[in-house]
Length: 235
Image (cartoon, rainbow, N blue to C red; front, side, top):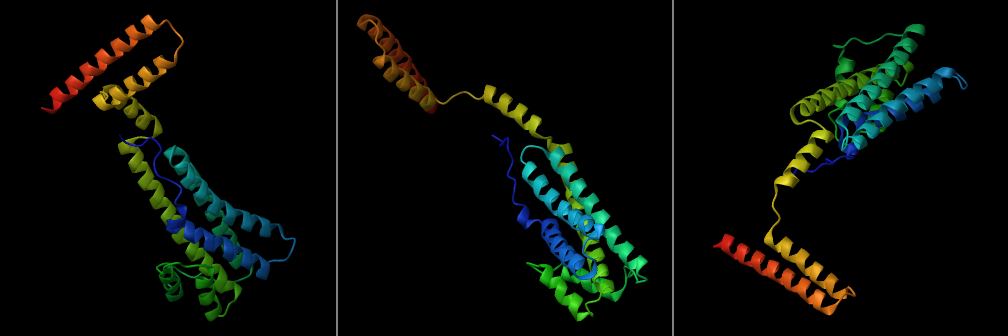
């Protein structure tokens, strides 16, 4: 029988989640290094980075029972990260700094970092420091990384939509489980075990001995019939 609650919760293996952790850690560092304490943008950027990460987690945990909820939360994560990209773009523009083009060799180098296993903020910080460590480098690294993460989230959502269209969701799995349960006939071994339990329970009941003997005899007759039926099916 197909499980009703699907395997879920293993979000640590998702590349989108791994990227979101880097984005959150890097954004926290960026705000501490380049923005003034008390600036409202600090809270907004950190909250957007946190929302991106936490909604991936929540969506993955909800996936066992609701594909719809998972798709919705991945959409919230993506929207939060898109908001964060705009904050980094705004910082470049308002400070007279350059937004690197997609085919810039530096952007291509940042994309290659995504292919590393077990990447952390340290992976990107090494590149940032090696490229001068300035705010322009930092912002462009983050913009590139967030673009990559949003691409992964889009791909996840499309995959979930296709799966839902083909297989349905929780309601469909529950329906098929009920239908299958009705159509399945119990095995003789299962019936015999139930009869044995009933036999033992009746022996404990305080009723007239003659009546008890009659009931137990009927149970024994049914058990013998089930055994014979099982033997006949095996032959």
